[in-house]
Length: 272
Image (cartoon, rainbow, N blue to C red):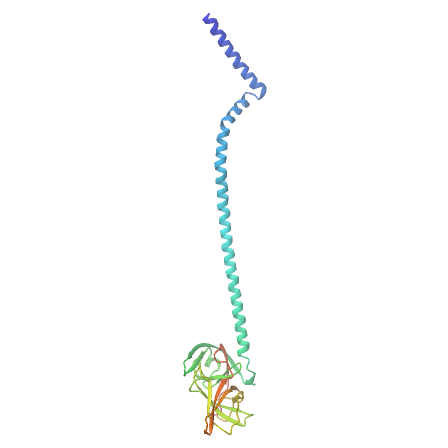
């Protein structure tokens, strides 16, 4: 009985296995069935791998893109800095050109030749006032030559080197200029009072009619230090002391001596 029962059980199991393979073969085939079973097992692992790998990929791509943005920003900053530098240079050149055009506009020198120079050093004090200029003997500049700028007389060359010179301004206390007004009918001596004190004239005879606003220019007399007709100053105030036979003048220089960058040296020397 036990043997018959065992045989029936084995036969039933065999039939079940055969039926199973037959079903798999008839539907998707044995290999497809096995692959499907494997996919069922592997799919959860694939999902997990994708869930981890996808953010990492995005992160790496973002890092690369961020580096590109930083590099582009640096390039733009450099280009902007260069553009600003060029704009500043152009503005500086335009300003220099304007200063040259303004300060070297000296029609009052007439046909006298001039040499354009730039101020290189300033040595002003309350009493002495001198400036260094960028050209000297190699450019034909000699001691004693007048120096002018837009407006009028600035000073006189007092020392030279091969490539530079020193100019004493007319406001220097050691400076004096012979001037005239009223078409040359009257003459005065104008003296410097120090850099911040302008010019003055003293002991002007009462019979000399001069009023505020009167313009004074170099007299150009024989042996004078300057050629005739260079604007020097205008009368600012007239001071009369009661009972005195003379009066004093305070003068405003014709050239703006406080804002000088470029000058013209007049190639002229006093007659011997």
